[in-house]
Image (cartoon, rainbow, N blue to C red; front, side):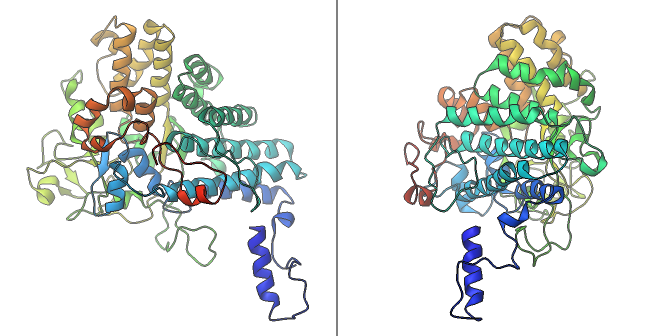
Length: 511
């Protein structure tokens, strides 16, 4: 940005005098050196990091949801975007696949690094200062969690880079170590909650939850369990509980509820005409466009660029509730012909029945949790429905998994039971008592599939469970896209070739 500022100042000066020093900064232009002066600047700086999560369609506005959902065996590219379809089917040929997401993540990372580098130098309230830096460290850790899972060997960029800086690849171990460091440091300065004006900012509970996920991804079960103690049995336990109604976790009227550990905030702007928050000439989209691209296709309200596999909804038929009904999470998680158990004539799709829109024999399935059919009959490009990134139910299931893995299977039952009985399934203690460690491990996989369907954690789970390496034949049966999967290559995206060609980075294996 400094280099760009100098260039623009030089261009303006040409119209004034040929004798001007072109490297002289424009006194009317805000620069990095002049910006970070007080607490107002610090708050605006951290707000810009949050805004960066949604500033283009390549991150949580849209594309990162495609990566989360469609790269797993839950979903696939189903619309007219052939590039997207090939991307999610492991049949891409360009080493720039994923370039947009890579760039968007590093854009947010740059903003976080600016906060971390500059806010500590400001004379302001120390508690607020420390909190803002902690928020930035959490968001940087989230960026790197995405980078290490999907690209494996990104560069560790921990300070605002100069144009001459070319950091090399880090190893996955180095990246995870930095994520752990950022989150551990953030924990000390994050509050347990906020007043109404700041709801949505990162909390201590969110940092505990993400740190647990990071440890769990590496198979560090003791560390993951310890990270969750604050949420499950410790000081923070009174802050969280399961919502009585599972569906309340996914509608716009129950955002930031007692089950929410961390969610990305959206707000509808009907007048929006762009996503780039660096452009002062637009009416900024503060919502998300993902709902429009995941909603059912014509004669429905969306483009249906991503769809779910049928095997997932069939998995909900494995057990009946205690009052002999289907697991209610099926119809909350997906739109399909039997989202209402009575069938296509009763299943509603944005104000019409499935049968009216698609007939009685259409077996397609659409992800539902990011949609808005619970309150309107159309979708636009500015959905206000928050993304619930980490829920308390997820924490309870991870905690149970850790207990099982460290040899405390009997103690793990209680946490799975809380998740199951909320949707009126019989407790696991009653339904499947006395499971050994391996059988309980397989049960946890089933529980996570049903509870967290369509929320973006399935691919992370598949990676850490070794499904890509050890269960590929089953994945191929569930999802034909995995017929294209090449072990040793497709676990990670290629690092964008332009960055490899113009830096000290080396390409990932197989590309």
